[in-house]
Length: 441
Picture 1 (tube, rainbow, N blue to C red):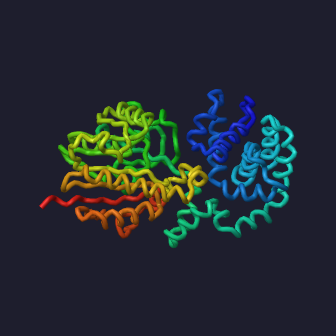
Picture 2: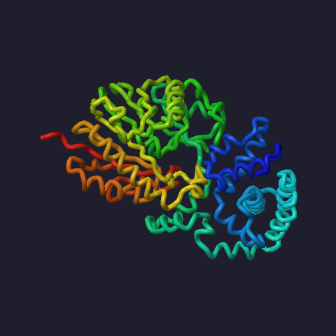
Picture 3: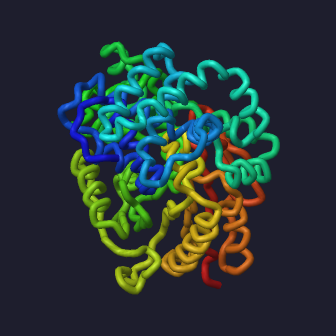
């Protein structure tokens, strides 16, 4: 987009959307870079809602835009593509009045430094208003367009989850709720729930994650009682199950590989304060700082190491671990409702590469586990290739490994491990498998 300084909220949103679709930037990064500090709270909320909405429905919106254009915008005009998508989203998915959506988007185009395109954007949006029913029906005939998923991902979900595909695809397009993790070193879930009620914040206890509280409506963290004092953190209930499953005992040494931003590390320390040491490893120095910030706020201590967890020769002190959490890098296809840009940024080829990385981490970390110890493998993916098939391969190649069955009321029992389908009990899509190392004979 032309470098035009403006506090026009639609122009800002279009610039953020362009950063994702044309530059491959994550939505979180694009928002961090693209939201001016001068924007009002209301305008910031509007920009975020528009950015998330367009990327959530990108596949369908772009289909409609291409139908409405005589010829596609050039690559250098991806800012105009973003403005067109933004206008269509407002008309199709928001309570913005259609005439206001058209006029305000056209006005933003004029302020973009490409005023020559205002007539085109105006024609596209008005044409959609005139022919909306016909165009929408055309989109409905193509399942992956109607459900706003790239074809490769639609097919993968259909192949892996034929009975649950409708539920998964639908939940991927819903906004995720806000879930809290109560610090059991400070208070209890029930007591904190009562504190929220006093603040008129409606919430309920989660049925499966013991320290989890689900808010009926998201709030700013400064509205949460004693947040800065470490009473509570924000973390999805599915992610909270990791500490519950690993359940470190007194005196045990624990490794959290690929630990950033540290939510699971902190939870492990909250529920198991008598372990001998928790070592948190991550390859990103900036993300290690985030772990440090979380530890400090929660008044917890861990050994932090900046390193590639798979290169154990660079950081391991040869002292075995009793418990290992491998929250492996993955496609994040279970958290699309929180990060709709995943649908745009991920490719089928990425999955193949991630499977190789996951396999390398499993192979590298297994020797670090003490005999009789347990390794919990976790991903926020719903794809079998990254989950149960990965564990099947590992068990076939390691005779000293056995699956420790996860018995639970949540998730779906798989050939190995358990899979949480996106949206189950309000949770993100997650996979867990627990492996135990045989004792030496």
